[in-house]
Amino acid sequence: VQHHIDTFRELTQHRDIILINGHGNTYFTAQHAVALLLAATNKVIPHHNWMTEGQWRRGDSHAKSIPLRGRKIGLLGYGAVNQKVHKFLSGFDVEFLVLKRTWNGNEKVPTPVRQFLPKDLDEFLKETDVLIIAVPQTEQTIGMIGEKELKLLGSESFLINVARGIVVDEEALYNALKQKVIAGAGIDVWYEYQPVPDVINRRFPTKFSFHELDNVVLSPHRGASPMDDLKRWDEVIENITKFAEGREDFINVVELDRAY
Image 1 (cartoon, rainbow, N blue to C red):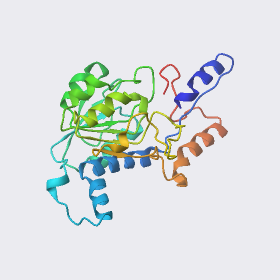
Image 2 (image 1 turned 60 degrees about the vertical axis):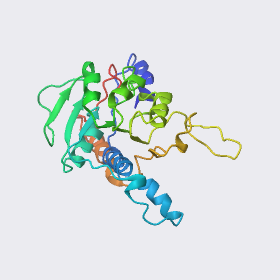
Image 3 (image 1 turned 120 degrees about the vertical axis):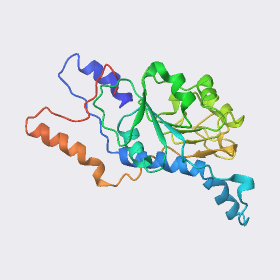
Image 4 (image 1 turned 90 degrees about the vertical axis):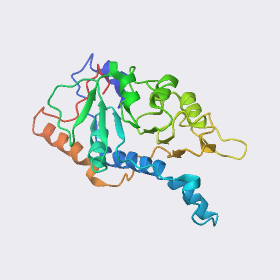
């Protein structure tokens, strides 16, 4: 909802308006985050490409899978998407670290977590093996992960971004992948959504050559797929029903001062 925030801030100065977010994408985006992670750690892309070239069973010497067992999953942001990611990954024998804006002591979590606040970002990253980013785009999160933060993750870490591209510094991420500062990444969100075609009519949503790297899984911002799944409208219908009944106990109400 971030691109509507300024408009609604202006409108609320003159009218009593409640802005409600839709979380209908939650299940699909969380599933996509897990898919990107497993594609990256299990080296699905290179082995697929070798097989399409007729190269049978290149084996571990070229691209071995990375077990998740015993690793620390760092969930950056703990809204609807990363809560679902947490649930999906709970059976993988991993430890969970969660960084969120506030903790109130009443959070319901599927497995125990280590709790971090924004001021603990450096410590959180040092402890994290797999960083899954699902935060809203706000003034506080833009550029949140840059060169220093990527170095803190370390050379055996993986980064999955299903939030907004701008949360991670574009050049820093490219250099970290190219120079193997981190082990790999799965990226569904980008930097240029109206890319200019190159001389052979290719369109890349970034000014850096991520497509030439061998340690990244690229996805064209499709974590919300499938769009025709009707369950995505359940919460919208619930809120419309409440409004029609004269109720005000809406779900997913946006706090305009927080921008989410």
